[in-house]
Length: 160
Length: 160
Image 1 (cartoon, rainbow over the protein chains, first blue to last red):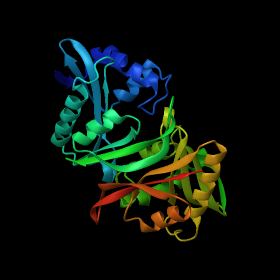
Image 2 (cartoon, each protein chain N blue to C red):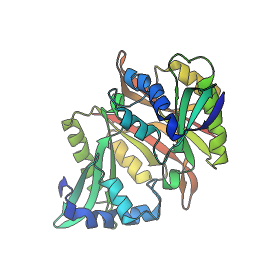
Image 3 (tube, each protein chain N blue to C red):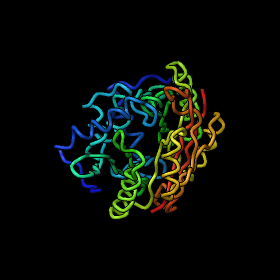
Image 4 (spheres, chains in turn cyan, yellow):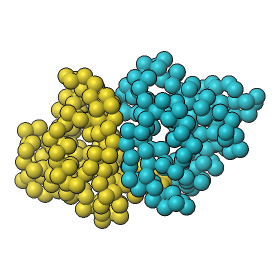
């Protein structure tokens, strides 16, 4: 697997990865009917460093890295990761997270925080825990899951 | 005290309130050298509902109300409050917070979350707790305080 910065010509592939996840509305706090333009403006924002993961020529995942806060909070990184539909369980998210941790260290970040991990997303929580993240907060009923109703969201954190 | 929506002609007064707080860098995760233009673009953003508190003709405080997340997280509100220099201890922040809770209920929000309350800001923490907020998360060393060094930040939450 190759992980490299996203290029302008990756935009369509990135949208094809984001679309089903945003449409499902089960893991990201984004509007389920978000347009391609709005989704790409969010994911490939100027203040985001956006990467794609490739197997052969296929884009099978994407992630962004950014500072979670400005000013006195700018030493803590934040990332979002999405694996392409049909490619779960192949270690792609793990590889992207490890890549992001190394890149965040390289940029001088001292910690990484996930602000909003939906508590029903058990696979992701286990993965982040296995990569050194701790649950440091629980937001009660902060996420309206399309099938489960109001569920908690977790704040996860690790130093670098 | 009157609390009303901020008008275009309040911009200078709002900046005069924000400037010392941003410049001090002790309570908000914003660049200490943030320009007036950038600060007002942040505080009076299109997706923010921004209010000012007045005593007589003097603007003595300002706050914003917004959805903290989009999509499945859009039922949780978020606010930021700043009291004018020299007006602390007069109940202005308390009045603004109570106003914001009522306004958030009116808009149909089901909860309110503060994402980043600097742990050394004891007065604010006591105030939010007295208004029904609970600490639901603690971000270790997430804020670089200009005098205290790395200090924790708290996530605070209450239902409406």
